[in-house]
Image (cartoon, rainbow, N blue to C red; front, top):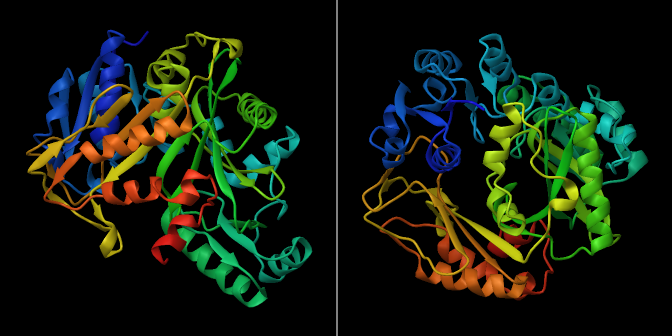
Length: 448
């Protein structure tokens, strides 16, 4: 087991990793930018190191500064959390060259699954369902139009690298496809340094369902069941729940086993999320992408399985075999997570940096709060606007929904605007209650 790890991240996920490591007897080194100086969670680490100014490019994305901090602090490993450098294969490779363990997959597995075209080809080989579309990367407009007419509109153009909605365009005809192809390639090049794209069939009314998988260095891989992430806006998730409320046990088994099969074929160790889109009209699943890191929404999976995903990531990266087999994983109850963002939904979700004068989170049976915020905390303008994750667990979905409504009603945050009111509205909507939603539901509800 490692004796000392560095956390190449900030905020809520940094605190989550500190807590997991502390319960394992592993020391932690927290890095921070000048914008995060004085953040309370830093005091829970065994050591803290400033790595640069507030802008992420000069701190949390500064590979040289992070590696220098790791070497000075004499750590065995680096945990990247999510975002920032978590899926950066170059950073992973630098860690390896410096003989520092990267708590995540190998460079090769990250590159394979991070390239959506290569990942799709492996999925086809492993009989994991994929969307009809191009077999490889597309560079010519005429070829794109030919494929689109073959599989039928609408289609979606996607960047081969990256995610988060960048380098993606939906087209309903030839003209829109030609235009979308050019703009997607330009955006992908600017965002990821890779302008390659591919084309797939686009589902108008899909649900977003993902499977949590974890593997070790001994060739073992198990799934921890699935999550439903359909409640999203512009490809950014708002509410997640586990398990998915619209599939039966047979569909669950097929989906989860396919995800584990794909991860095992990639010789993957660490936590991964295999994302699918579900066509509710045909009950068919199609591979969307694989995230080669821990997800923001991992707590709902922990709540229904009892597995500590962060601890398990550290264990398998240290070379230990998975501490459980597939038959040991039991699904119990239902969990829901709301991402509490410092944003104003009434002003097109404008970020709300500033002083949190009031921050009084809820509690009670079955309520979990993952946050680094507190009354008196000043939210910096430099980073993502998420300030907390509120998670509840209950015997079934309806009881979990009522528990979340109760918890949200107790949550006091001010004077800045947050998404708490929006979450309450969404969870009380008849379409959400009756599971009659798709990935565009929130945008239709809010008018775009």
